[in-house]
View 1 (cartoon, rainbow, N blue to C red):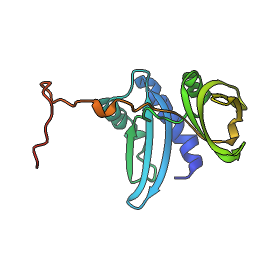
View 2 (view 1 turned 90 degrees about the vertical axis):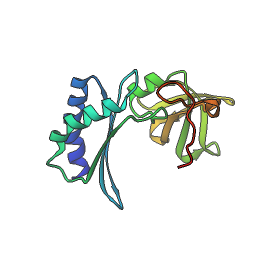
View 3 (view 1 turned 60 degrees about the vertical axis):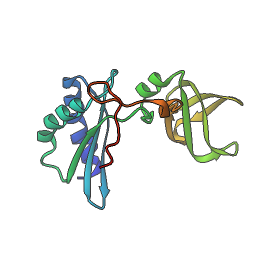
View 4 (view 1 turned 90 degrees about the horizontal axis):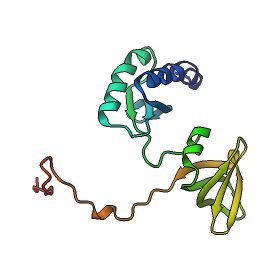
Length: 170
């Protein structure tokens, strides 16, 4: 399967299916790994994606992609640190702290963090400790939300009855 076929044929069919099922198609990729070719489909919705959502979409998408050359198909959520790529992503990300990785250093840095305060077709505006920075969108290799992991180590996992889980030593 060529990248053009992925974008021209599979993408629109998967996007249409996602919309019918109430999801947003975030991305599709075909990745070659030592174990084979993986067709990866990322879906999302405002309240998040469950395992049941991924399974329902996977079952519905199989007939759409069965004639294409891949070994494994995965359907998943893009995760909480999902890269911002589209105008819709940037709109949702306004006012949040982001990490921007650049293809080439600007002002001596290839990476910066700050609050996404604006964007247009050509640039992003990031509020940093050193002031606002305007970055050409094509200069950004990756833009993703910063995830605050503070307090995660304090989370206590429980079983179905609400009792703390213990390691049985198996």
